[in-house]
Image (tube, rainbow, N blue to C red):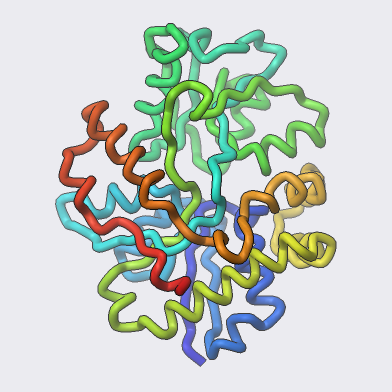
Length: 303
């Protein structure tokens, strides 16, 4: 058996469900693969998923598409390439508590935003505020990554970035009302997030194993969409006690499953969608125009 490692972008959650299913139902083993799942709880996010890929600690890593751009454009270039889109649409939001009355992005001017310090995150949020008529002048703070959501709930920050299908569901489960602002609603052509990323050189030398891994992973996500009850049971085996107690998983999978896509879409990335995001980054002086010509994604492992 070939052992492959994948680093999660976050503690186990609904976005990882297809991987857990493929592991538990033997889809990887059918392809001659054992997998090791690296959980950021193990080092409290000391080493980011992108850095784990760079250091050779993992074969695959889960991260936003921005991580691919970042790794390919740093001083010591990492030949990262996105190989699988977990969600076919962006279902993240900038969120504030409804009780704060910050019901529009422009009202975040002068307020505190809790940032994950992702490559373009602060710029994207500022542009959202500007597109709504604000100035984009906020106080940006950088709490411990795994505690950022709680800074919003505890009133230590006025807004932060969430996944509607996880933190958003937790808020509903706890009867906490949120104001949520989507990227598309305010003129941000946000890209795929999260994606599974590999290194191009390793794809070339491990093409069969890597392709088998991705195909088994796709099978796991398609199973989750069609067999929600069994999928929930499998996912719960990986969740933290906190998440099991605070998130209605059935509500989460109902919200998420349509975004995995059907067997013709699941995992695939559309070039036009990526190009629109890349051009937006260039137009806003966040990246050099060379990114538009770079080899940043492939659907080949799914074919």
